[in-house]
Length: 468
Image 1 (cartoon, rainbow, N blue to C red):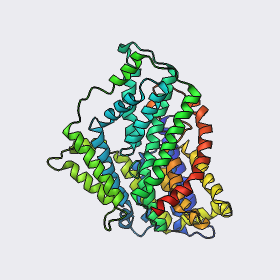
Image 2: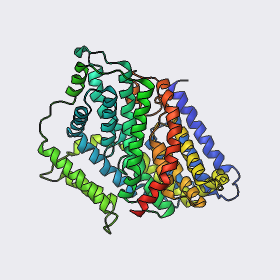
Image 3: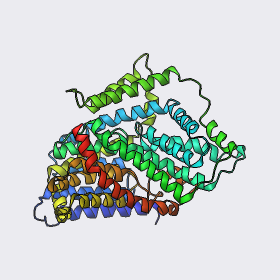
């Protein structure tokens, strides 16, 4: 089937799905607006699956159809749900990413870790994973992965160096960098666009607020465990050979000889540190919230004497398609909530689990999301579609909603299964250094082990976070 025929076919399927929800009998416990909200959700997903139009355009079409079909009162009301705090937080978060990328700080961090870990091939793999994870806490997972992959590939694929690195070592690094980038995104609310989106949805559905510091109390240990477990699994599975002195020198030289920190880099460090301190203080200072801190920090980047970013540098960093898509999804999520469609789905599909123990429910959630994530190229669509229903289930079963949110954050972001699907893995997968089977070989058992571990430790970590 050619591309045009495929797009037209999926467009017809999407239209048929929406028509079915518009004219089918309404089940008990749901009304027609709720039925149409669910139909528009499936309509949107079908458009995505067939690449009928770009994802942001599909989202905008759904926003138009919400008031046209009577799901929301007006387009103006729908747009208000689009422009939420998530929108402005994302704009500021991408400014932080652009500022960090605009410096040599990531390369300096990599060089420092390489000096610490010396010549052990296994520790060098860990160094690349840790560096990508640390940088990913303040910039997008995709950007962090692309940054460190470029540094490594400049050595691995440089014929002028005359080096033949061990294939098992290259395999470990090329898989490890995406894992580190994904894991680092769990550590902080700004580490991934999914995290702050979930916090906003948690507040909308449950009225529960989670501070920046509370998130880190849970997210940092989870990120560290993810990196260390991924590293151990890679080394046990592939057993990378030791590096020669020439290979080690080549890896170090890729980080460059950068000299002392520049004034601009000192200002970048100072601003990021100040923002982290203020984010933590949002728990104790009334009137100060995470979005406000992010926006203040973004403004400071552009003021005279700071000049940490130009507007062109910032514009190139912002993935406007993601920003628009998430805004549209937030508007759709609001419609699903206001019509009661989410409660109906939660009761219909998950009601049978209400008598399960908390461990079983959280494990089931994590396993379902992990499996779904293996076939969806990014986490935000999963997060927006599933978070309200998962939070509703938590409330009905007496589970702390933050446990559910962190389960979503872990398994909607990090995956050890099919790299050819994930947008972030594709940065290294397409270079041909590893196969889908290589990832599945260690990824399946690692996923099962971490499902058990994370399900067990989340409740005590969440309890600690809410006490502090």
